[in-house]
Image (cartoon, rainbow, N blue to C red; front, side):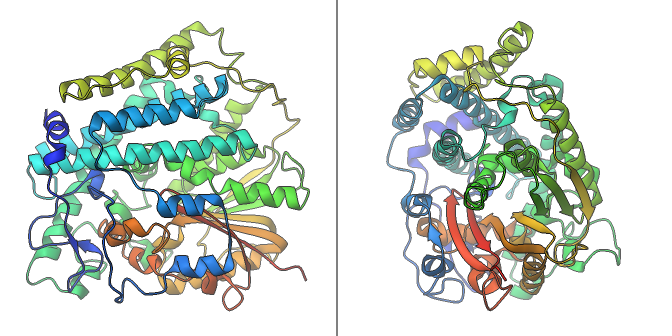
Length: 557
């Protein structure tokens, strides 16, 4: 009911206010309780005038990037893109469906969109349920499910869905260009279409969302108190729940932080099991596609160096592999690559191994189309179609209750949702044997590998969680283990100047117990990884929504 009212009254919602007052930078104004949007995201991305100060330098990281990297078209697109807040909800929905229809050129495209519409719908519902449960339970930032808060959440969610469509268009183009394969989890036989698997993830998320927002509320209250100064705000132990349950000399001090306010930080099985669904809910299902942007420079490196199309005789390291999900997409595109996943958490490494083993079992025996051969499995097809149509029905019911007319799905997309099967190009999927995959527990700043061990090194969403001094150590380590001529690919949060319209509130994510995030927003990656830092040469740059991908090459001797 709260969400229904939110959609009805969205147009009347007051604009979110942000200021850069003494004590915090790029944070919500605290003279009144901040109006949160989707999972803490702002209500609008309207451009705001900025003045130079310690947080908003005149020369941004994006300015530096422009002088050193070859920028892909995605950089210009995301630099300028914004959601049109002036449109009514009905007009926004119609525009989104028109974009999907225009981007659907083949049955395989329709299958891609059917899956991702279903995916974002599910995560949208998941996030709304989590926010509602947290508000009712008194775990929200002001412990009350106010209408203004609901309006802000609905408006931000609408914008993020629109943004997700742009991400999926970019991802689908890479698929059709041969940059990487279509997501293997689109196959209806994947476990994520199993109701028991979905229920387990939903229950874990509901519990985690309540805990996370309760801790965030306590931190927000402490920052707003007159006694709270800047040092207290940034102290690692300023708020109860900031430190993990474990004290150990085996881990660096910065690592013993409950990043994102997640339970146990990186140091429990429960944290590892809920991480993927939590982060995908935050991004309304687009995180996988953002991460796959890192496969674009990897493909270019493969082509330039004339490597085997299957990855044979190529050795790749993923630093801070976490749950190993991105590594499965890498291996799915290059099944014979020899991969090593490195992480400091034994719990996340165990989850990464389980994901790797599941992908290997899932891949075994698949010799060509993932969809054509499954079309005869009527039981699986019916179950998946039921899940997809139910998710879309719930979204449609919510819109109808809010008085928002929704146009019908494009015909090709509707058919794909109903059957959830479509023909891929007939390409041989059989590989004689998969490449090796090993896992190593170690810190990125102190890796136990000989010099020049890997042809390629990838790193996804690590550097914004490292203290500045540790970033430099990790950068040098990445360069040290990379072979001459090899490629290092960094995927992390966008920085100041990458998307100027969001600069004014970009630092808000730091309020979710990300103590080093704001310093990352200003980090000069050319100085960090380039000639004066780790000794690598800047190569390419891509943007995809909240993610930037930079690639570097190690000079030949």
